[in-house]
Length: 150
Length: 372
Image 1 (tube, chains in turn brown, yellow):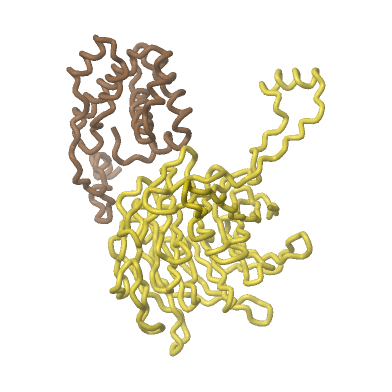
Image 2: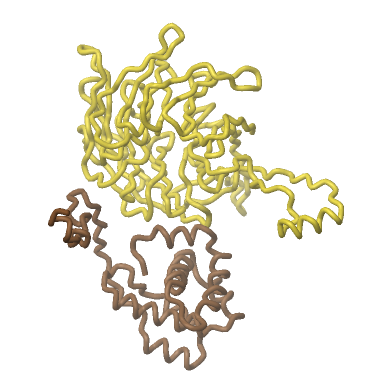
């Protein structure tokens, strides 16, 4: 065989990066949200005020940043809140959200599905069921089509 | 409403002739078949076979009786009827990717063609050399143009693209028409000028439709939403997210009402009355009355055992059994549609009646005037 077939270094090259017609997302000038405040939420969970913790956790979602650390941190906080809910409290919590809140909750639920921990899947499935009842297939489609992910 | 089945192949697109006795459809292949209504049935009368790629768009100009077709083979043909045979004329669209959508302008002196080459080709007939020429609109478009709609003034063109934006361009061709007057979207309209670019819609824009007056523009996107931009209110955009599967075709049927259909297999009615006031009205399909008949207890349990359900039918509860791909006005004008048609992936074409329900008058206290 010829020598030039030995190297497979070319396979690691991302050819799409060099495409001059490559699609680049619009850069949104909106505020880079930093995600919810972990300490405040810890306090509220300790006090047992789950509803407020829930609402604060869903505030300031880090959708505009590209920094994965911020997103991981926000995800961890939200999942902590979601997993500490009692099953009977899930439905009123979902009902207290507006349309965009339900879409955001769905985004977090699916991100939580991606990395399952010990008992997160069961409670997340309950959350999913209640959020689906309110948001319908449209909210799941918006999780799939969202360019700005949580 | 009535359903006609044109076979098992999905229908990608359709177009009607002027008196709605003939319909041109494409069964997801490189041919266009023209059917004529004979009584209650549709009989095949012509087959247009010039394209070598899958047909992506058909439009039939009612007054000049010309058909324009475009396909994934990067070509478009204009067909004219001579001696009862449809003869194709190649259009030089000069695109290097597939064509995705084609539409005649309201005055039928030009047509617009969307393509995967990230440009819109506006084509007109040049008499001196007896051929169809094209001009390109490329400004700002960063991905495939998926849908087009003409403004009633024959100059402005709305385009929805898979770069998540909806835009309005001027398609003014000075060789064939006079300078247009100002509209609510803008006053200066040289060819290719962009008069509106929406912000990120959240998904590919599948279909756009101007309102009958041309002052509102509605579009549907792949994130299961429908939006309207209002020229009379400073181009303000209102978006409504639905809890259903994405809609892929939208049509204005009155100055305030729109019909949209898509992957939920049935049409829905929406209403826009002003900024912030875009509402879902109702589902426009009447569910089939499932005639269960009398099922014996034995049959009931046998079904439960075999199929885990005692529901005999495995059909969707609506007329179309698969996604709807395109809606088209059949009778009436955009300002007052009486009938519209839909074709879908199930190979069926359904004719729908549209009725605007009368609004109820209510009286305000101490005023005496009816308020609708």
